Image (cartoon, rainbow, N blue to C red; front, side, top):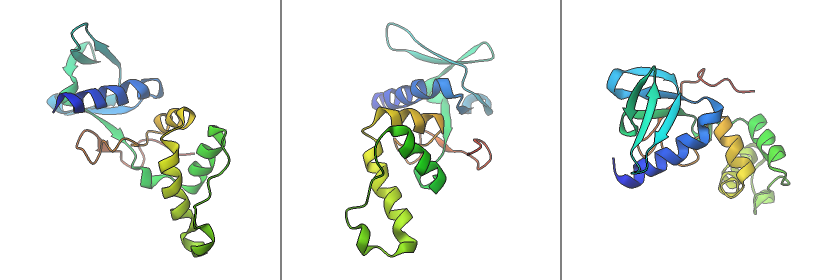
Length: 148
């Protein structure tokens, strides 16, 4: 794992800590809730579980792919953000059955700039940083994080 990947994972895990994310500890094959994170003055990071420290390199959070967001969740996220719903630029040219997918894809790009949305995405365990694709996170099983 590169230093940049470690920093990205640390940033992501710290933002999710208040929302009780599940993690997988590869060294001991454990699935558990994230307990605590400690970073010393030299930048060395430890993840603590059951009184034992683990290297950040041995930890992968379970996250939900952005594509798993439901229409109800998208509506809630837009409401929580305080912004108006985002219309796709070519909304009228899209067949009705494809409008949700277009709206979701367009909205995802905009959500990344709004801190209210980042908090919401963390709370609902969505992988908006692409950690799953980078091999730094695991796709959460469908029942791991109950959706509203």
